[in-house]
Image 1 (cartoon, rainbow over the protein chains, first blue to last red):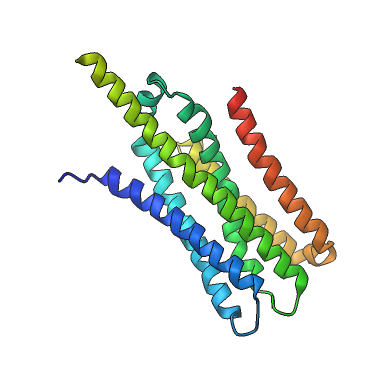
Image 2: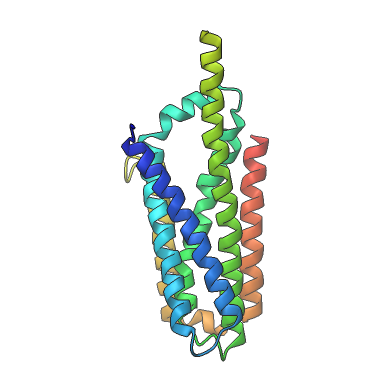
Length: 160
Length: 63
């Protein structure tokens, strides 16, 4: 078994992204049924969202700067260059939308959601936007990963 | 953009978060958010998020 630092960072990045997306669904469902009793839980879940997405950002950013350049060359010379040009480029820029919304979510949940409709609507919309953009970003990851595999398989097939 | 941290991606990330914090402090100090129509704010947020996502995808699809 040979697990590299690159593997650990990349998998942790994806795991934190997935956990953040799951936590935001938790915020959404709890905010739909906002009561005084679950106010603290909503704030904790919102804080978990911000923490997970921040961790995904730092880990993903580190991996992108230190390990992705080699994969990028492989992908761009392989049969799926669109995986970088379209999916990776969109993913890395769209991520900032998810990140900023995730940082805003704990602030938005500070209001009494059970007694104020407007802040509750805001939390629901922000949570939904994080969930949708998070799923889109999470889905782009395997496309980029698979494109590197396809490029490697093609390169090996040519060599044989 | 790479002058500040030697990597444009890092600079962009730090700049985005700094912009968010500065704007947040301005809104907090001026109580501007309380004066705005909540439904208008929500519509603006949804509209800009959809526009940004679709715009980014379209931009990279065409270039």
